[in-house]
Length: 337
Ligand code: SF4
Image (cartoon, rainbow, N blue to C red; front, side, top):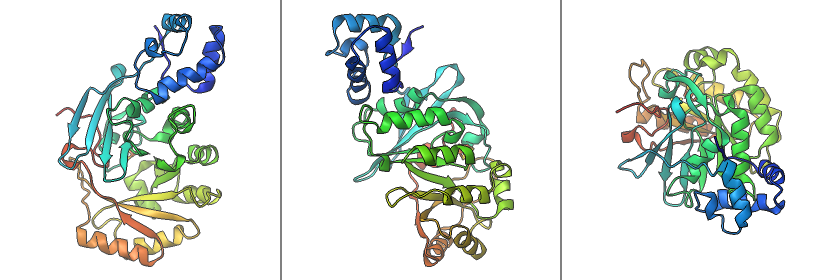
């Protein structure tokens, strides 16, 4: 079976060209074709010698994969579905706004973390994506030249697939790769502390932590991961890192009616986040089948936001996008319609 070139780093490409006895600069030419231009085959790499293309064709393919289906929301959000082998499918959400065009990518097929409020978690983990499969979600879209921001907030827990996620970030942000600014990429986690530490030390992209409550007992109920990685562990780790003015840490907070939307929560959030230069993104809960959870009403949501802002924590409410096509937060699941 031929090996895919898409998803390899410059160093890995250099190893391949060296094994084939090709000039070293060929690796950079290949990476430019893979990550900057609209080609799908080795034969289209027109500045490579005929011999180089022949040699590459013997054992390699480009390996891009177009999406299988697309659904378009009335608000313009698009949900793309990609097949990934026999193990299933993943979804990516393209969210166009006036200036910003954001792509929300998946990092795993399903997820093993079983957060109470999430459809993906109900599937269990089927497999983790390769770096190529992660970056393919960007590169294979018709809109890929327009994408300005990337968020790792689709299916899966990125830090449960750390190596591939780090490699995908390298491809996205390197000058030999797609050349995205590190300040335009956010990786979201439920707080797997050792992997988060590695990410904070080895990447300059933004971090988003799904917190959802400042109280441990409630978080254990909402997110089983809290039995292993506590809120205190997460906050302590983040405080160890000097993040600079440009790098952002945000806390994601789905607001549930009567569970995590009280004054007690505002005060506790202010206490535990004290000393961290961060912001909170409040997210409306999109009900999933057979859940006892309910979203807070709009008036209460606004009050909660204002109370947090009054405490000095920059807090915003995230706009819900693509709800009619199940592309909104927590709804990605590749379920059959
Ligand atoms: S919220 Fe994220 S980590 Fe939790 S089950 Fe869903 S995909 Fe997994």
